[in-house]
Image 1 (cartoon, rainbow, N blue to C red):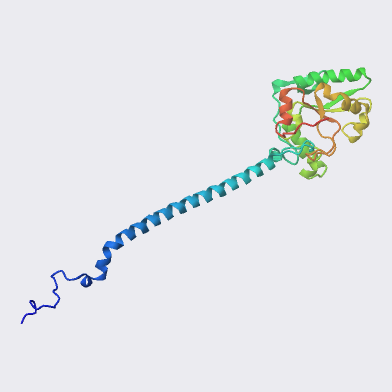
Image 2: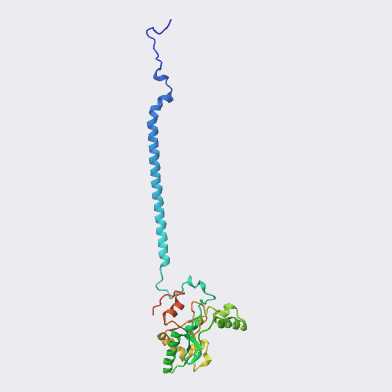
Length: 266
C-alpha cells in the first residue's frame, strides 16, 4: 500500500526541506554582504596606506631639501677675516702660476714720452709720465726699462733665455711668464729702475732704492700697483720692479675680473 495517506508519516514536498539544500547554496545569500564589507575594508586600507606613504615621502623630501639648503648656505659663507683670496675656479686657466692675457691692439699703444721704443696704452703712458715728473720734483729718478711686449718677444724671453740658463719651464716661470701669459702683453705693465742706481735694475735690491720707496708711497695716486709682491698667491718670484696700471675700467677688469680678488680693508 501506499504510505501517502497514512497518518503520522511526514510528507516531503517536491522542493524538499531546508536541511536538504547543500550548505554552499544555503550560505550564498549571507556571503554577499560579507564580501562587500571586505572589499570596502581593502579599499579603505589601500587609501590609508597611500596617504601614509605619500606623507612619509614628503617628510623625507623636506628634510633632504632643508639639509641641502643649509649645506649650500655654509659653502657660500665667506670668512670675514680672510685676506684677499683668488677664486680657484677662475684660476684653473693659469699656466705655471701665470694668467692668460691678450695682446694690446697696436692702435691703443703709444710711446712713453722720452722713451720712443717703450710703449704703453695711452691712459697708462700718460699717467706714468705724470708720475715720473712728480717723482723728479721730489729728487727721485724713475726710469722705464720694459713696457709692452708681444707674444713673440715673450717667447724668446721664456724659451730662449730658459735654454741658455738650463732652466726647466717651471723654474723659468718663477722669473718670466710663458708667451701669452705675460702682463706686458696688455700694454699696462712696466718694469722700472732707479736712474741713480742702475746696478739694482731687475733685481730684488731695487727695493732698497729711493725709486721703490717713492713708488710704494705714491704709485696708487697714479693708478699703478706692484704686480708680484713677496709671497704672492700666483707663486711668481718677488719683483719689486714690475708695476701695472689699474687706473681705468679696462685695465682694472684685465687684471682683476679673472681672479675675483675680494676687497681688502686698510
